[in-house]
Amino acid sequence: MSARGLFVTGTDTGVGKTRVAVALIHALRAQGLRVAAMKPVSAGSAPGGLNEDVEVLLQAANVAADIRDVNPYAFAPAIAPHIAAQQAGRRIELDVIAAAYSRLAAAADVVVVEGAGGWRVPLNDREDMADLAQRLDLPVVLVVGLRLGCLNHALLTAESIANRHVPWAGWVANHVDPGMDCQAENIAALRARLPSPCLGVQDFLREGLASGASLQWLTLPEGLAYSNSL
Image (cartoon, rainbow, N blue to C red; front, side, top):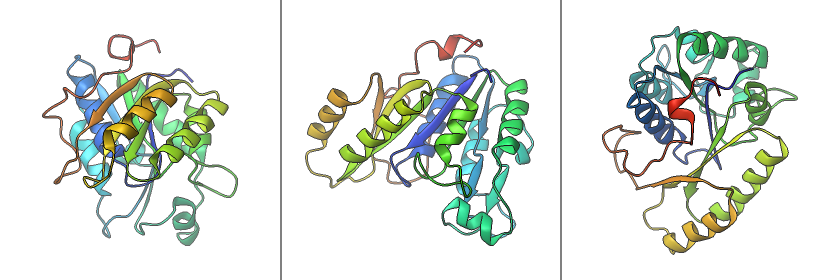
C-alpha cells in the first residue's frame, strides 16, 4: 500500500494524539494539500453522536468523506476497543479499515490517521494497533505525553515501532501534566534516546482538544508536505 499520509500513535491513552493529529492536518493544509482525517476505531461517544476525537478531526480536514470511512468502527463505551467490539457483537477487521483508508487516499493528497490508545492496544483476539500501522505502512508519528513514566513508555514504544519495520516520521512531546517536575530534563532525555527527528514540543492546553491557530512549535516530517509519492 502506498504511504500517502501519517499514522499518529501515542505512548498511552490521553497523551494528546488528537491535538497533534489536528496540528498536522492544519500544517499540511497550509502547504496547499487536500488532507483527509481518519480515526479507524473510536470508543466513547454519546448515543447517536460522534466520538469527540472524530468530530475534531472532521472539522480540521478539508476533504469531505463518508463517516463510515473516517471512523469505520465506533463504540459507545470508553473502554478498550476489542472489549467494546465484543460487547457489541462485532469484530474489528483490518481489511475493512484498509479498504476505508484506500478510499480516503484516493480523494486526498494526504491522510492523517489517528490510532486509539497506545501502540499495542488490542483490536481483536489476535491483532493490535501496531498490526494496523504495519498494514497501512504509513510513517509513524509518536506522541509522548510528558508525565512521570513517559521515558520508559516512550523508549519501549519506539523500540516496538522499530521492530515492526514501519516507517518512522518522528516524535512529538506533549505537555499533559503542567505540574510535572523536571520537564526540560525529561525532554532532553527523550531527544538523546529517541530516533530523530523531534517534530516539536507542544505546550499544555487547558481548554479544547486542538487548534490550528498556532503551529510554530510543529515541524512537518521531511518530504511529506511537498510530495504525493510517499
